[in-house]
Length: 202
Image 1 (cartoon, rainbow, N blue to C red):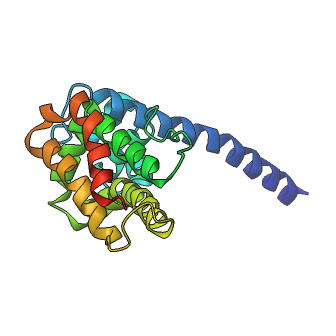
Image 2: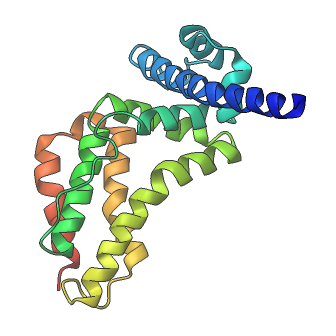
Image 3: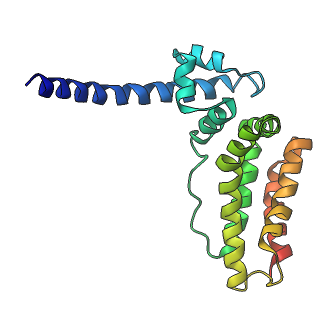
């Protein structure tokens, strides 16, 4: 009888704990995004996030192995970052939309954060992998898929190397982000994606 009571109590405690955990996690993500409005990634510290979110540092490390992982997760939680694109008419339009979305993302306060994360990630293999897995790989895979489909449907030249095409298309965008961020503007966004697609079109 006492064992049954104990099990019931444990079950109730577990149920109460989960929402509380989720609340703490959301508070940490919110605190991170709030601090990034005024601090660079380099200036941000786990201690500052913990203080603002009113949690212990160990609570943060329960979910994220380091600062890069935390900032990437906070970034992805922001409204609009993961919003789906409209349905494209064809693969050429899909690539244009994907490049347009990337330029819009980088031509914002988030662009500064991503550039800082890129720099921060170079110092650590673990951070570099988190940055790649969380941000770069999903982006590259989406563009790569559209290019491969476009080649198959003869929208793009059969001789195009899809992996090389992604590098060629995304390279100038990241180059501007890291060297001339002010040139990631509306003029570039309106002209570059179409020009990039034109170069591989059949």
